[in-house]
Length: 174
View 1: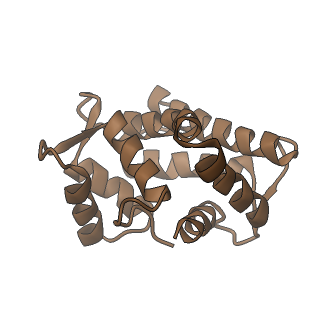
View 2 (view 1 turned 180 degrees about the horizontal axis):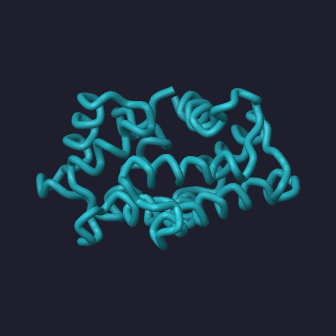
């Protein structure tokens, strides 16, 4: 299950289908998310998201032993992701992904309350390839408290549980 989710994540960043990722590939995701929310690429929230995704790529590049301006193959990405998830553990996963999820919240959170609501969450998952119905269902599954909003920690937990195969809901479509 985790391997399929890792493969899907890679494919969403490798839009050219080259079988390799560059820092620019992952930074483009920030641009897609910001654009879908009407956030100018120069806005600080968009810059933070782009920087956090770039830093995640840099971490992967460093661990793969490639230059930060080089490429990471699908096999390398898979190995690195599996190591992060299954060997390094949840604390390492949280350290690596918290800035990215914080960047996502910063771009998606249109009212500035530090939380994303169902509409914002759904729009984000549509960018990640889900249809509106599945995105809405995912929100319902994650919003266990029924507050109608999700904070950074709730999102990070859901994404971690998803990648660990403990959350049986789609958060990204291939």
